[in-house]
Image 1 (cartoon, rainbow, N blue to C red):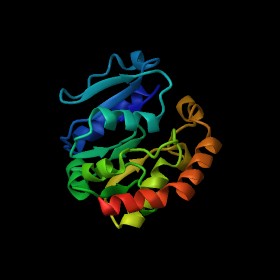
Image 2 (cartoon, helix red, strand yellow):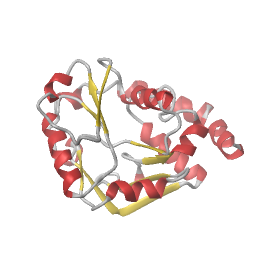
Image 3 (cartoon, one colour):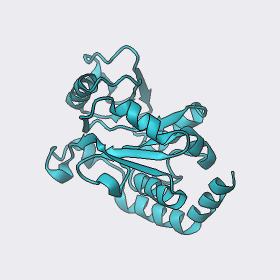
Image 4 (cartoon, rainbow, N blue to C red):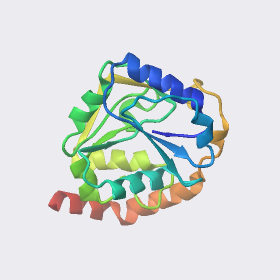
Amino acid sequence: MPTMRRPENLERFIKAYNDTQATLPIWVIFDAHNAFQYDGIETPKHWRRVSVPAGMRLGDIFNRVFKKYPDEKYYAMVADDIIPETKGWDLLLEEACLPDKIAWGWDSIQNEQLPVHPFIGGNLVRKLGWWAAPGLKHWYVDNVWKGLADALHCGVYRPDIRMRHCHYANGKAPFDRTYEDQPNHQTDYNNYVKFMQKDFRKVIDRVKSS
């Protein structure tokens, strides 16, 4: 769970985690420049607090984690602007993604259209060789996940698992500095189009043959 300049969101997530009786460990990823803002927050003892270099973006964070820990049973991303509402949501999504699927729940914005906060089976990530498609810093990472889910018939959408997304796009959060500082949208779009046109089919063929 990457978080930046939002200690109140982390506290809200911890409460929701406890309220829904979640048990899987979470790694909270802090930007080194802003990590001090979270010093007073006590996270569950089985969570980890990880600091990454200042300015590192989501796509690079995902791939850094996968490179360092390539043998995990699953890989999952939750954001600091979501509120889990379903009891045991973490174990339900873990079960749904194993061993090589992409599973996600209802988020109140994208829902079945896009796996914004997915659990991905470790076998699939290892076949891909990456967690986030190369060249993407922030935007369109989840579009590639959806493309993979459709092309490989490995998507598992669970509308019964509610992961409410409190985002400025649906009026549930202010447009704060963290949203404002996100990477250039056009650059990621250009890289996404290039990837889909030149590399996506090769990736699908490689996964199917492995």
